[in-house]
Image 1 (cartoon, rainbow, N blue to C red):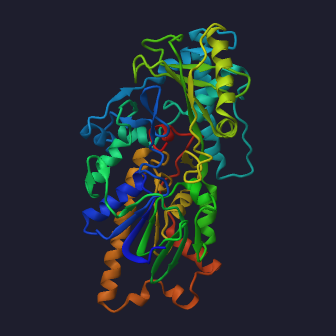
Image 2: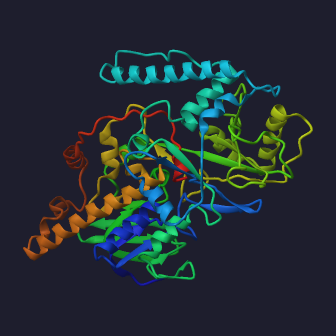
Image 3: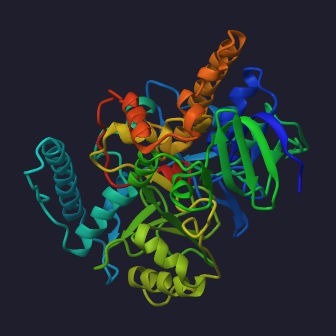
Amino acid sequence: MDSPSRSSVIVIGAGVSGLSAAKVLVDNGVDDFVILEASDRIGGRVCKENFGGVSVELGAGWIVGVGGKEPNPVWELALKSSLRTCFSDYSNARYNIYDRSGKIFPSGVAADSYKKAVDSAIQKLRNQGEDADDLSIVSEPLCTPKTPMELAIDFILHDFEMPEVEPISTYLDFGEREFLVADERGYECLLYKMAEDFLFTSEGKILDSRLKLNKVVREIQHSRNGVTVTTEDGCIYEANYVVLSVSIGVLQSDLISFTPPLPRWKTEAIEKCDVMVYTKIFLKFPYKFWPCGPGKEFFIYAHERRGYYTFWQNMENAYPGSNILVVTVTNGESKRVEAQSDEETMKESMEVLRDMFGPDIPDATDILVPRWWSNRFQRGSYSNYPIISDCQVVQNIKEPIGRIYFTGEHTSERFNGYVHGGYLAGIDTSNALLEEMRKDKERKSDGQSFLLEPLLALTGSLSLSQTEAVSGLHKCDLPTQLYLNGKLGIQEAIL
Protein backbone atom coordinates (compact mmCIF):
# COMPACT_ATOMS: atom_id res chain seq x y z
CA MET A 1 0.00 0.00 0.00
CA ASP A 2 1.26 3.46 -0.87
CA SER A 3 1.82 5.84 2.00
CA PRO A 4 -0.42 8.90 1.62
CA SER A 5 1.09 11.68 -0.45
CA ARG A 6 -0.31 15.20 -0.30
CA SER A 7 -1.04 17.19 -3.45
CA SER A 8 -2.75 20.46 -4.10
CA VAL A 9 -5.30 18.81 -6.39
CA ILE A 10 -6.35 15.29 -7.31
CA VAL A 11 -8.04 15.01 -10.71
CA ILE A 12 -10.17 11.87 -10.97
CA GLY A 13 -10.57 10.76 -14.57
CA ALA A 14 -8.29 11.34 -17.58
CA GLY A 15 -10.94 11.99 -20.20
CA VAL A 16 -11.15 15.26 -22.10
CA SER A 17 -12.55 17.24 -19.14
CA GLY A 18 -10.03 15.90 -16.65
CA LEU A 19 -7.12 16.65 -18.97
CA SER A 20 -8.33 20.14 -19.87
CA ALA A 21 -8.85 20.85 -16.15
CA ALA A 22 -5.34 19.67 -15.31
CA LYS A 23 -3.83 21.77 -18.11
CA VAL A 24 -5.48 24.93 -16.78
CA LEU A 25 -4.08 24.20 -13.32
CA VAL A 26 -0.55 23.84 -14.71
CA ASP A 27 -0.94 26.97 -16.82
CA ASN A 28 -1.71 28.80 -13.58
CA GLY A 29 1.22 27.49 -11.59
CA VAL A 30 -0.39 24.50 -9.87
CA ASP A 31 2.08 21.72 -10.65
CA ASP A 32 1.58 19.43 -7.65
CA PHE A 33 -1.41 17.47 -8.84
CA VAL A 34 -2.20 13.81 -9.40
CA ILE A 35 -4.48 12.39 -12.10
CA LEU A 36 -6.12 9.09 -11.14
CA GLU A 37 -7.49 7.17 -14.12
CA ALA A 38 -9.44 3.93 -13.64
CA SER A 39 -8.56 2.37 -17.00
CA ASP A 40 -5.21 1.64 -18.62
CA ARG A 41 -5.30 4.65 -20.97
CA ILE A 42 -6.31 8.29 -21.19
CA GLY A 43 -9.29 9.46 -23.24
CA GLY A 44 -12.39 8.18 -21.47
CA ARG A 45 -15.15 7.90 -24.04
CA VAL A 46 -12.74 9.00 -26.77
CA CYS A 47 -11.41 5.59 -27.71
CA LYS A 48 -10.11 3.98 -30.89
CA GLU A 49 -9.58 0.35 -31.81
CA ASN A 50 -8.04 -1.37 -34.79
CA PHE A 51 -10.72 -3.17 -36.76
CA GLY A 52 -10.48 -4.56 -40.24
CA GLY A 53 -7.10 -2.93 -40.74
CA VAL A 54 -8.19 0.62 -39.87
CA SER A 55 -8.74 2.72 -36.74
CA VAL A 56 -12.39 2.99 -35.76
CA GLU A 57 -13.84 5.18 -33.03
CA LEU A 58 -15.76 3.21 -30.43
CA GLY A 59 -16.97 6.35 -28.69
CA ALA A 60 -16.69 9.93 -29.87
CA GLY A 61 -16.48 9.82 -33.63
CA TRP A 62 -17.48 13.28 -34.82
CA ILE A 63 -16.47 16.87 -34.28
CA VAL A 64 -19.86 18.54 -34.18
CA GLY A 65 -20.28 22.27 -34.67
CA VAL A 66 -18.01 23.65 -37.39
CA GLY A 67 -18.30 26.59 -39.77
CA GLY A 68 -20.14 29.06 -37.53
CA LYS A 69 -19.36 32.47 -36.09
CA GLU A 70 -17.19 31.06 -33.29
CA PRO A 71 -14.38 28.51 -33.60
CA ASN A 72 -15.13 25.18 -31.95
CA PRO A 73 -12.13 24.60 -29.62
CA VAL A 74 -11.98 20.90 -30.49
CA TRP A 75 -11.96 21.73 -34.20
CA GLU A 76 -9.10 24.14 -33.49
CA LEU A 77 -7.18 21.32 -31.81
CA ALA A 78 -7.91 19.09 -34.81
CA LEU A 79 -6.55 21.69 -37.24
CA LYS A 80 -3.35 22.09 -35.22
CA SER A 81 -2.83 18.33 -35.26
CA SER A 82 -3.77 17.99 -38.95
CA LEU A 83 -6.40 15.45 -37.94
CA ARG A 84 -7.95 13.77 -40.96
CA THR A 85 -11.73 14.23 -41.05
CA CYS A 86 -14.60 13.77 -43.50
CA PHE A 87 -17.65 16.00 -43.78
CA SER A 88 -20.85 14.14 -42.89
CA ASP A 89 -23.93 15.08 -44.88
CA TYR A 90 -26.98 13.49 -43.31
CA SER A 91 -29.46 15.31 -45.54
CA ASN A 92 -29.63 12.45 -48.05
CA ALA A 93 -30.22 9.73 -45.46
CA ARG A 94 -33.98 10.27 -45.54
CA TYR A 95 -33.98 9.40 -49.25
CA ASN A 96 -32.25 6.07 -48.60
CA ILE A 97 -34.92 4.38 -46.46
CA TYR A 98 -35.30 0.67 -47.16
CA ASP A 99 -38.35 -1.39 -46.29
CA ARG A 100 -38.10 -5.05 -45.30
CA SER A 101 -38.49 -6.17 -48.90
CA GLY A 102 -35.44 -4.18 -49.99
CA LYS A 103 -37.37 -1.40 -51.75
CA ILE A 104 -36.40 2.24 -51.20
CA PHE A 105 -39.30 4.48 -50.29
CA PRO A 106 -40.00 7.10 -53.00
CA SER A 107 -38.15 10.32 -52.23
CA GLY A 108 -41.34 12.39 -52.20
CA VAL A 109 -43.01 10.08 -49.68
CA ALA A 110 -39.91 10.04 -47.47
CA ALA A 111 -39.49 13.83 -47.62
CA ASP A 112 -43.15 14.40 -46.78
CA SER A 113 -43.04 11.98 -43.83
CA TYR A 114 -39.83 13.59 -42.59
CA LYS A 115 -41.29 17.11 -42.76
CA LYS A 116 -44.39 16.03 -40.82
CA ALA A 117 -42.22 14.43 -38.14
CA VAL A 118 -40.11 17.57 -37.79
CA ASP A 119 -43.18 19.82 -37.60
CA SER A 120 -44.72 17.53 -35.00
CA ALA A 121 -41.55 17.51 -32.91
CA ILE A 122 -41.30 21.29 -32.96
CA GLN A 123 -44.97 21.69 -32.02
CA LYS A 124 -44.56 19.16 -29.24
CA LEU A 125 -41.66 21.16 -27.84
CA ARG A 126 -43.73 24.34 -27.94
CA ASN A 127 -46.62 22.61 -26.20
CA GLN A 128 -44.39 21.28 -23.46
CA GLY A 129 -42.84 24.70 -22.99
CA GLU A 130 -46.29 26.23 -22.57
CA ASP A 131 -47.45 23.40 -20.32
CA ALA A 132 -44.46 23.71 -18.02
CA ASP A 133 -46.21 26.58 -16.24
CA ASP A 134 -49.58 24.85 -16.14
CA LEU A 135 -49.45 21.28 -14.88
CA SER A 136 -53.20 20.87 -15.44
CA ILE A 137 -52.67 20.83 -19.19
CA VAL A 138 -52.01 17.41 -20.72
CA SER A 139 -50.67 17.55 -24.25
CA GLU A 140 -50.73 14.68 -26.69
CA PRO A 141 -48.20 14.46 -29.53
CA LEU A 142 -49.67 15.83 -32.73
CA CYS A 143 -48.96 12.55 -34.46
CA THR A 144 -47.68 9.25 -33.15
CA PRO A 145 -45.36 7.31 -35.48
CA LYS A 146 -46.96 4.02 -36.47
CA THR A 147 -45.58 2.76 -39.77
CA PRO A 148 -42.04 1.35 -40.07
CA MET A 149 -40.95 4.44 -42.01
CA GLU A 150 -42.46 6.80 -39.44
CA LEU A 151 -40.78 4.85 -36.64
CA ALA A 152 -37.43 5.02 -38.42
CA ILE A 153 -37.68 8.77 -38.96
CA ASP A 154 -38.79 9.26 -35.36
CA PHE A 155 -35.70 7.32 -34.23
CA ILE A 156 -33.41 9.50 -36.34
CA LEU A 157 -34.93 12.74 -35.07
CA HIS A 158 -34.99 11.82 -31.40
CA ASP A 159 -32.27 9.25 -30.85
CA PHE A 160 -29.76 10.00 -33.59
CA GLU A 161 -30.69 13.68 -33.72
CA MET A 162 -30.65 15.63 -36.92
CA PRO A 163 -29.85 19.34 -36.62
CA GLU A 164 -32.98 20.58 -38.39
CA VAL A 165 -35.27 19.83 -35.46
CA GLU A 166 -34.37 22.66 -33.14
CA PRO A 167 -31.74 25.34 -32.56
CA ILE A 168 -29.11 23.67 -30.37
CA SER A 169 -26.39 25.78 -28.74
CA THR A 170 -23.59 23.87 -30.46
CA TYR A 171 -25.00 24.66 -33.91
CA LEU A 172 -25.88 28.25 -33.03
CA ASP A 173 -22.43 29.03 -31.64
CA PHE A 174 -20.05 26.86 -33.62
CA GLY A 175 -21.91 26.00 -36.83
CA GLU A 176 -24.02 23.15 -38.18
CA ARG A 177 -21.34 21.18 -40.01
CA GLU A 178 -20.17 17.85 -38.62
CA PHE A 179 -16.94 16.04 -39.42
CA LEU A 180 -16.23 12.36 -38.93
CA VAL A 181 -12.79 11.63 -37.52
CA ALA A 182 -10.99 9.36 -40.00
CA ASP A 183 -7.41 9.42 -38.83
CA GLU A 184 -5.25 6.37 -38.14
CA ARG A 185 -3.97 8.12 -35.01
CA GLY A 186 -7.53 8.27 -33.72
CA TYR A 187 -9.56 11.06 -32.13
CA GLU A 188 -7.50 10.39 -29.00
CA CYS A 189 -4.40 11.93 -30.57
CA LEU A 190 -5.92 15.35 -29.75
CA LEU A 191 -5.93 14.40 -26.07
CA TYR A 192 -2.34 13.13 -26.23
CA LYS A 193 -1.32 16.41 -27.87
CA MET A 194 -3.04 18.28 -25.06
CA ALA A 195 -1.33 16.11 -22.45
CA GLU A 196 2.08 16.73 -24.01
CA ASP A 197 1.73 20.40 -23.08
CA PHE A 198 1.87 19.70 -19.35
CA LEU A 199 2.89 16.06 -18.80
CA PHE A 200 6.31 14.55 -19.48
CA THR A 201 6.21 12.39 -22.61
CA SER A 202 8.74 10.42 -24.62
CA GLU A 203 8.23 8.93 -28.07
CA GLY A 204 4.50 9.54 -27.86
CA LYS A 205 4.07 7.88 -24.46
CA ILE A 206 3.15 9.69 -21.27
CA LEU A 207 5.75 8.89 -18.63
CA ASP A 208 4.78 11.53 -16.08
CA SER A 209 4.44 10.06 -12.58
CA ARG A 210 1.56 12.43 -11.85
CA LEU A 211 -0.64 10.43 -14.23
CA LYS A 212 -1.57 7.16 -12.54
CA LEU A 213 -3.42 4.60 -14.66
CA ASN A 214 -5.41 1.61 -13.42
CA LYS A 215 -6.35 3.53 -10.27
CA VAL A 216 -10.03 2.87 -9.56
CA VAL A 217 -11.30 5.43 -7.07
CA ARG A 218 -13.75 3.88 -4.60
CA GLU A 219 -14.01 6.43 -1.79
CA ILE A 220 -13.64 10.17 -1.34
CA GLN A 221 -13.46 11.44 2.24
CA HIS A 222 -13.78 15.19 2.54
CA SER A 223 -13.66 17.74 5.32
CA ARG A 224 -12.80 21.38 5.78
CA ASN A 225 -9.13 20.39 6.00
CA GLY A 226 -8.84 18.49 2.74
CA VAL A 227 -9.72 15.31 0.88
CA THR A 228 -8.56 11.71 1.09
CA VAL A 229 -9.05 9.44 -1.92
CA THR A 230 -8.86 5.66 -1.62
CA THR A 231 -8.45 3.42 -4.68
CA GLU A 232 -9.50 -0.18 -5.20
CA ASP A 233 -5.94 -1.44 -4.82
CA GLY A 234 -5.69 0.11 -1.37
CA CYS A 235 -3.70 3.21 -2.28
CA ILE A 236 -4.47 6.45 -0.46
CA TYR A 237 -4.01 9.93 -1.87
CA GLU A 238 -4.47 13.19 0.00
CA ALA A 239 -5.00 16.66 -1.40
CA ASN A 240 -6.43 20.07 -0.70
CA TYR A 241 -9.03 19.68 -3.46
CA VAL A 242 -10.51 17.11 -5.82
CA VAL A 243 -11.67 17.68 -9.40
CA LEU A 244 -14.11 14.84 -10.11
CA SER A 245 -14.44 14.31 -13.86
CA VAL A 246 -16.16 10.91 -13.96
CA SER A 247 -19.22 10.43 -16.17
CA ILE A 248 -22.80 11.07 -15.07
CA GLY A 249 -23.37 7.31 -15.32
CA VAL A 250 -20.61 6.66 -12.79
CA LEU A 251 -22.03 9.34 -10.49
CA GLN A 252 -25.36 7.50 -10.62
CA SER A 253 -23.70 4.16 -9.84
CA ASP A 254 -22.19 2.98 -6.56
CA LEU A 255 -18.60 2.90 -7.81
CA ILE A 256 -17.52 5.88 -5.68
CA SER A 257 -18.70 6.45 -2.12
CA PHE A 258 -18.50 9.81 -0.37
CA THR A 259 -17.77 10.37 3.32
CA PRO A 260 -19.72 12.27 4.49
CA PRO A 261 -22.41 11.44 1.90
CA LEU A 262 -23.34 13.98 -0.74
CA PRO A 263 -26.30 16.18 0.28
CA ARG A 264 -29.74 15.29 -1.01
CA TRP A 265 -30.03 18.26 -3.38
CA LYS A 266 -26.85 17.05 -5.11
CA THR A 267 -27.87 13.39 -5.43
CA GLU A 268 -31.38 14.29 -6.59
CA ALA A 269 -29.95 16.49 -9.35
CA ILE A 270 -27.57 13.72 -10.45
CA GLU A 271 -30.46 11.24 -10.66
CA LYS A 272 -32.55 13.62 -12.80
CA CYS A 273 -30.03 13.58 -15.64
CA ASP A 274 -30.68 10.93 -18.28
CA VAL A 275 -27.84 8.65 -19.32
CA MET A 276 -27.91 7.87 -23.02
CA VAL A 277 -26.39 4.70 -24.43
CA TYR A 278 -25.16 4.89 -28.01
CA THR A 279 -23.63 1.86 -29.69
CA LYS A 280 -21.85 1.79 -33.02
CA ILE A 281 -21.64 -1.81 -34.27
CA PHE A 282 -18.87 -2.37 -36.82
CA LEU A 283 -19.13 -5.11 -39.47
CA LYS A 284 -16.32 -6.14 -41.83
CA PHE A 285 -17.11 -7.74 -45.21
CA PRO A 286 -15.02 -9.41 -47.93
CA TYR A 287 -16.36 -6.96 -50.51
CA LYS A 288 -18.88 -4.13 -50.95
CA PHE A 289 -22.46 -4.98 -51.86
CA TRP A 290 -24.08 -1.68 -50.85
CA PRO A 291 -24.49 1.51 -52.92
CA CYS A 292 -21.59 3.97 -52.68
CA GLY A 293 -20.95 7.44 -53.96
CA PRO A 294 -22.43 10.89 -53.29
CA GLY A 295 -25.51 10.83 -51.10
CA LYS A 296 -25.11 7.12 -50.28
CA GLU A 297 -22.96 7.22 -47.12
CA PHE A 298 -25.96 6.85 -44.80
CA PHE A 299 -29.00 4.62 -45.21
CA ILE A 300 -31.96 3.64 -43.07
CA TYR A 301 -33.79 0.39 -42.34
CA ALA A 302 -37.51 0.67 -41.59
CA HIS A 303 -38.73 -2.03 -39.21
CA GLU A 304 -41.86 -2.54 -37.12
CA ARG A 305 -39.68 -2.32 -34.01
CA ARG A 306 -38.45 1.20 -33.35
CA GLY A 307 -34.66 1.50 -33.32
CA TYR A 308 -34.02 -2.04 -34.56
CA TYR A 309 -30.76 -1.71 -36.55
CA THR A 310 -32.14 1.49 -38.04
CA PHE A 311 -29.25 3.78 -38.94
CA TRP A 312 -26.41 2.56 -41.16
CA GLN A 313 -23.24 4.13 -42.50
CA ASN A 314 -20.65 2.82 -44.93
CA MET A 315 -17.04 3.73 -44.17
CA GLU A 316 -15.93 4.32 -47.76
CA ASN A 317 -15.57 8.07 -47.28
CA ALA A 318 -13.53 7.56 -44.13
CA TYR A 319 -11.51 4.56 -45.26
CA PRO A 320 -11.87 3.70 -48.96
CA GLY A 321 -11.70 -0.02 -49.62
CA SER A 322 -12.22 -0.93 -45.97
CA ASN A 323 -15.51 -2.76 -46.69
CA ILE A 324 -16.87 -1.79 -43.28
CA LEU A 325 -20.46 -0.96 -42.36
CA VAL A 326 -21.52 0.66 -39.08
CA VAL A 327 -25.01 0.36 -37.62
CA THR A 328 -26.10 2.47 -34.65
CA VAL A 329 -28.41 1.33 -31.89
CA THR A 330 -29.30 3.27 -28.75
CA ASN A 331 -30.61 2.98 -25.21
CA GLY A 332 -32.82 -0.13 -24.78
CA GLU A 333 -31.53 -1.76 -27.96
CA SER A 334 -27.95 -0.94 -26.90
CA LYS A 335 -28.43 -2.65 -23.54
CA ARG A 336 -30.04 -5.66 -25.22
CA VAL A 337 -27.19 -5.98 -27.71
CA GLU A 338 -24.56 -5.59 -24.99
CA ALA A 339 -26.13 -8.43 -23.03
CA GLN A 340 -26.12 -10.93 -25.90
CA SER A 341 -23.22 -12.59 -27.71
CA ASP A 342 -21.54 -10.90 -30.66
CA GLU A 343 -22.51 -13.95 -32.73
CA GLU A 344 -26.19 -13.25 -32.06
CA THR A 345 -25.73 -9.57 -32.92
CA MET A 346 -24.01 -10.52 -36.17
CA LYS A 347 -26.87 -12.88 -37.01
CA GLU A 348 -29.48 -10.16 -36.42
CA SER A 349 -27.44 -7.63 -38.42
CA MET A 350 -27.09 -10.00 -41.37
CA GLU A 351 -30.84 -10.69 -41.40
CA VAL A 352 -31.46 -6.95 -41.64
CA LEU A 353 -28.87 -6.49 -44.39
CA ARG A 354 -30.37 -9.38 -46.37
CA ASP A 355 -33.78 -7.73 -46.06
CA MET A 356 -32.30 -4.64 -47.70
CA PHE A 357 -29.82 -6.11 -50.20
CA GLY A 358 -31.03 -9.65 -50.87
CA PRO A 359 -30.13 -13.18 -49.73
CA ASP A 360 -26.93 -13.52 -51.75
CA ILE A 361 -24.78 -10.98 -49.93
CA PRO A 362 -21.71 -12.37 -48.14
CA ASP A 363 -21.53 -12.98 -44.42
CA ALA A 364 -19.57 -10.49 -42.34
CA THR A 365 -16.08 -11.75 -41.52
CA ASP A 366 -15.77 -9.81 -38.26
CA ILE A 367 -17.81 -7.74 -35.81
CA LEU A 368 -16.96 -5.20 -33.11
CA VAL A 369 -19.54 -4.27 -30.45
CA PRO A 370 -18.59 -1.56 -27.90
CA ARG A 371 -20.14 -2.00 -24.46
CA TRP A 372 -20.31 1.42 -22.82
CA TRP A 373 -23.29 0.58 -20.61
CA SER A 374 -21.58 -2.49 -19.15
CA ASN A 375 -18.32 -0.61 -18.58
CA ARG A 376 -18.31 0.25 -14.88
CA PHE A 377 -15.95 3.16 -15.53
CA GLN A 378 -18.46 4.79 -17.94
CA ARG A 379 -21.99 3.38 -17.43
CA GLY A 380 -23.32 4.95 -20.59
CA SER A 381 -22.33 7.18 -23.45
CA TYR A 382 -23.32 10.75 -22.62
CA SER A 383 -25.69 12.89 -20.61
CA ASN A 384 -29.03 14.17 -21.79
CA TYR A 385 -31.20 16.50 -19.76
CA PRO A 386 -35.00 16.21 -20.01
CA ILE A 387 -36.75 18.18 -22.76
CA ILE A 388 -38.07 20.66 -20.23
CA SER A 389 -35.31 20.94 -17.67
CA ASP A 390 -34.93 23.34 -14.76
CA CYS A 391 -31.55 25.00 -15.19
CA GLN A 392 -31.13 24.50 -11.45
CA VAL A 393 -30.54 20.78 -12.09
CA VAL A 394 -27.39 21.45 -14.11
CA GLN A 395 -26.23 24.05 -11.61
CA ASN A 396 -26.67 21.63 -8.73
CA ILE A 397 -24.81 18.87 -10.54
CA LYS A 398 -21.78 21.10 -11.14
CA GLU A 399 -21.93 22.88 -7.75
CA PRO A 400 -18.87 22.09 -5.59
CA ILE A 401 -19.34 20.24 -2.31
CA GLY A 402 -16.74 21.72 -0.01
CA ARG A 403 -13.42 20.82 -1.59
CA ILE A 404 -14.86 18.53 -4.27
CA TYR A 405 -15.31 20.17 -7.69
CA PHE A 406 -17.44 18.42 -10.32
CA THR A 407 -16.70 18.57 -14.04
CA GLY A 408 -17.43 16.71 -17.27
CA GLU A 409 -19.70 17.14 -20.28
CA HIS A 410 -22.72 16.70 -18.00
CA THR A 411 -21.81 19.93 -16.17
CA SER A 412 -21.91 22.02 -19.35
CA GLU A 413 -25.18 23.98 -19.54
CA ARG A 414 -24.88 24.65 -23.26
CA PHE A 415 -22.85 21.78 -24.66
CA ASN A 416 -23.59 18.70 -22.59
CA GLY A 417 -23.16 15.48 -24.54
CA TYR A 418 -20.32 16.74 -26.73
CA VAL A 419 -16.52 16.53 -26.67
CA HIS A 420 -16.25 20.30 -26.72
CA GLY A 421 -18.69 20.35 -23.80
CA GLY A 422 -16.32 18.22 -21.76
CA TYR A 423 -13.30 20.24 -22.86
CA LEU A 424 -14.86 23.58 -21.93
CA ALA A 425 -16.30 22.20 -18.68
CA GLY A 426 -12.83 21.19 -17.52
CA ILE A 427 -11.56 24.70 -18.18
CA ASP A 428 -14.50 26.31 -16.37
CA THR A 429 -14.15 24.02 -13.35
CA SER A 430 -10.43 24.67 -12.97
CA ASN A 431 -10.95 28.42 -13.24
CA ALA A 432 -13.56 28.21 -10.46
CA LEU A 433 -11.19 26.13 -8.34
CA LEU A 434 -8.29 28.52 -8.92
CA GLU A 435 -10.49 31.39 -7.75
CA GLU A 436 -11.35 29.46 -4.58
CA MET A 437 -7.67 28.65 -4.02
CA ARG A 438 -6.84 32.35 -4.30
CA LYS A 439 -9.57 33.22 -1.80
CA ASP A 440 -8.40 30.48 0.55
CA LYS A 441 -4.87 31.83 0.40
CA GLU A 442 -6.13 35.30 1.21
CA ARG A 443 -8.18 33.98 4.12
CA LYS A 444 -5.19 32.17 5.55
CA SER A 445 -2.98 35.23 5.20
CA ASP A 446 -5.64 37.15 7.13
CA GLY A 447 -5.86 34.42 9.76
CA GLN A 448 -9.44 33.57 8.74
CA SER A 449 -9.10 30.06 7.37
CA PHE A 450 -11.61 28.86 9.93
CA LEU A 451 -14.32 30.62 7.90
CA LEU A 452 -13.91 28.24 4.95
CA GLU A 453 -16.63 25.86 6.08
CA PRO A 454 -18.16 27.28 9.26
CA LEU A 455 -21.05 24.81 9.31
CA LEU A 456 -18.70 21.85 9.18
CA ALA A 457 -16.72 23.18 12.11
CA LEU A 458 -19.59 22.21 14.41
CA THR A 459 -21.21 19.24 12.73
CA GLY A 460 -18.61 17.59 10.51
CA SER A 461 -21.22 17.52 7.74
CA LEU A 462 -24.13 19.61 6.58
CA SER A 463 -27.53 18.63 7.80
CA LEU A 464 -30.28 18.01 5.26
CA SER A 465 -32.01 21.31 5.95
CA GLN A 466 -28.72 23.18 5.78
CA THR A 467 -27.72 21.67 2.46
CA GLU A 468 -31.09 22.50 0.99
CA ALA A 469 -30.67 26.07 2.21
CA VAL A 470 -27.22 26.23 0.65
CA SER A 471 -28.55 24.90 -2.66
CA GLY A 472 -30.99 27.79 -2.69
CA LEU A 473 -28.03 30.14 -3.04
CA HIS A 474 -27.12 28.62 -6.37
CA LYS A 475 -30.17 29.65 -8.35
CA CYS A 476 -29.43 30.17 -11.99
CA ASP A 477 -31.06 32.67 -14.28
CA LEU A 478 -30.06 31.01 -17.55
CA PRO A 479 -32.93 30.54 -19.98
CA THR A 480 -34.39 27.06 -20.01
CA GLN A 481 -33.12 25.16 -23.02
CA LEU A 482 -35.26 22.77 -24.97
CA TYR A 483 -33.82 19.41 -25.79
CA LEU A 484 -34.97 16.50 -27.88
CA ASN A 485 -34.12 13.07 -26.52
CA GLY A 486 -30.61 12.52 -27.76
CA LYS A 487 -27.39 14.09 -28.83
CA LEU A 488 -24.72 13.23 -31.32
CA GLY A 489 -22.53 13.75 -28.31
CA ILE A 490 -21.25 10.28 -28.15
CA GLN A 491 -20.41 10.45 -31.73
CA GLU A 492 -18.83 13.75 -31.32
CA ALA A 493 -17.61 13.40 -28.08
CA ILE A 494 -17.72 11.54 -25.55
CA LEU A 495 -18.54 8.88 -26.95
